[in-house]
Length: 231
Image 1: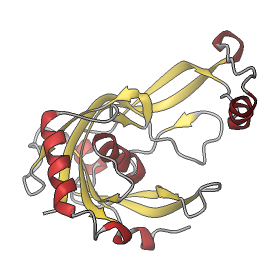
Image 2: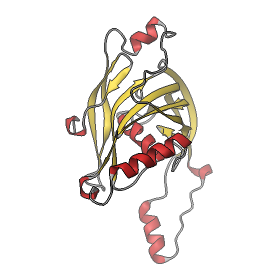
Image 3: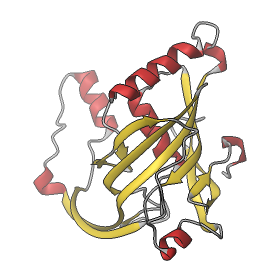
């Protein structure tokens, strides 16, 4: 079986809506691209792909307003390339000079179950059996190993994770209030509007976003195939 399920949780999360240009405002739940990053943080190889096909929301959707200090710029990639070529250059970035305060509407106390399928790219299958990566991922996830710490939208919002049986039922949600159950789409599906599916890296110099119409049904969101997402 090449399908896996990770249960992830964290104190804070922010899956930024791209239409918000100034202040950060999160989607109601984790996006497929952010979920893919969690799997890639545990195992990533250039010859494999992760496809998210289902996301379950384990906890009520809670919000928090935070005001944080952020750095307003990055070191230009062109300046780095020029310094590497010439062997000299000024690449310093001083936080005190570039600091700016920004507000954000984030999620707090989040918990999800992320269902994903592991595949090997067609051009690499002859030399790379799927079983090798499947066993590698299972071993790493069971031991809590990762290439880098998984995070929930922003790198400062670290996520804890554990591998669970994809066919098992999630934790009991009987303690949820009626309002929380309605918000998670129990009884009546909840429309979440358009959500970022992922970025199209066909042109690495100009990646393009693709979207899909998100809907919560009984606490879970089905993720369509990449080909069904809207450019």
